[in-house]
Image (cartoon, rainbow, N blue to C red; front, side):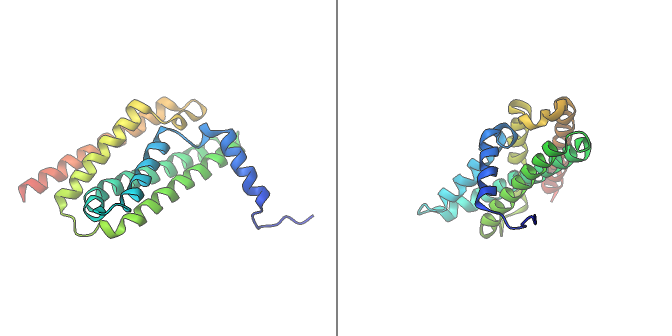
Amino acid sequence: MHASALTTIGDIGGLLAYVFGNPYLFISSTTVMTSGLVLGAVLVSLLPHRTHMLRRGAPTLAVILTYFGLGSIVLSTEILLRFHDTIPNETEVQLVSGLGHLVEAAIGIALLIPYLRGHSRAEWLWAHTLALAYWTFQVAVLTPPWFAFQGQREAVLHVVLTMLAVAAMLNVLLWRTAVRR
C-alpha cells in the first residue's frame, strides 16, 4: 500500500481530536494570553482610530511575539534533542507545537509590520522593557506547563529566568547609552 503525502480530511480530524483530547500539550496560559494579544491587535485594527492605537502598541507586541516564537521553538527543539531517543512521538508532538507557536508569532508580527516603522530608539526600548515585564510575569508567576515536560521544570525555569535577567541587563545598558546621547 502506498502512503499519500497529501493531507486528508481524516488527518486533519485526527489532529484536531488529538489537540482537543490533549490540550495541555498545546495550550497554556502563555499561549492563551499571547494569542489574546494578537486577537486584540486584529480587533483594534477594525476600530475607527486604529492607526494611532496600533502604531503605539505595535513595537511592544512585536517584541512579545518575538520572544514567544523564539522561546517556543528553542524549548521544543531542546525537548526533541534531549528526549527523542526514549519518547519519539511525544517529542515530535512538542516540536510541532513549537513550530505552531513560531508560525503564530510570525503571523502576528507580519500583521504589525505597517505599524512598526518610524519608531524612535526610546520607543523600542520601552517596548522591550514592557515585553520583559510581560514575560517575567508569564514565566515566574504563571510558569507555562510545558516547562515541566519530563520533569525538567526547575532546569527550564532557571535557564529562562537567567535569559530574561541577561535581556534585562542588556536593556538597562541600552537605556544608559540612550540617555547619554
